[in-house]
Length: 71
Image (tube, rainbow, N blue to C red; front, side, top):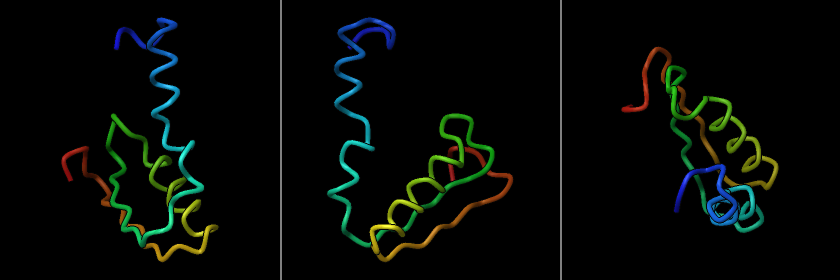
């Protein structure tokens, strides 16, 4: 816990990054995103989609234009 810039929090947050587990992604995925989500940029969803495609995982990407985080 704590603030993201505190050393203890940095250590915890570092272990929770999805990129660490990419090598374990194998199940088919439907990536749903929106382009007005200010919490998660659409590039995060697109990036996840590309990683899954490169790993030959069955994947679909759906982006809802003009929608926010509550899609």
